[in-house]
Amino acid sequence: MERFTISLSEELAREFDVLIAARGYENRSEAVRDLIRRELEALRRTRDPHAHCVANLSYVYNHHERDLADRLIELQHDYHDLCVSTLHAHLDHDHCMESLILRGHLDEVQAFADRLVAERGVRHGQLNVVTVAPGRAHRHGQGAPHTHLRPHD
Image 1 (tube, one colour):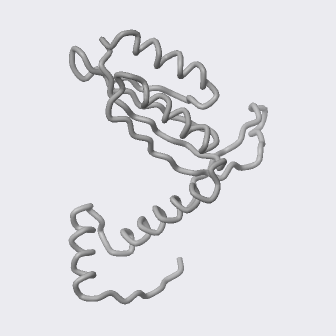
Image 2 (cartoon, rainbow, N blue to C red):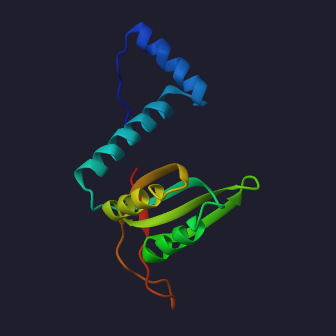
């Protein structure tokens, strides 16, 4: 672990302490690490739109909307190579929430998410992306060859 010192004005330090307390951090170091990770992640996504990523796309929709559920399923089938898993929850008699776990190249995942959220009747769509470093293909014992996707530090 590498250590470094930063200087802040008293006002900025006070505001930062309020922020980290509100978010439940145990100390300043954890909060600073998360801020740095967030900024580095944003930079990675900007620099390399074709980077590998994992993502969670969550959205709410009215399942009574004409053919919407069928359109959403069809779209997921069209992008089956990106869709890892779907979680479906009923919110009330009319509304459902889905979360899709996605894996692929950032530009393709973003294009899919934009297209799905743009469907008439989809509400509150949000994409959360983490870029990953793909490892080398290998196998364990007699198992099938596979590649691990490792999040950046």
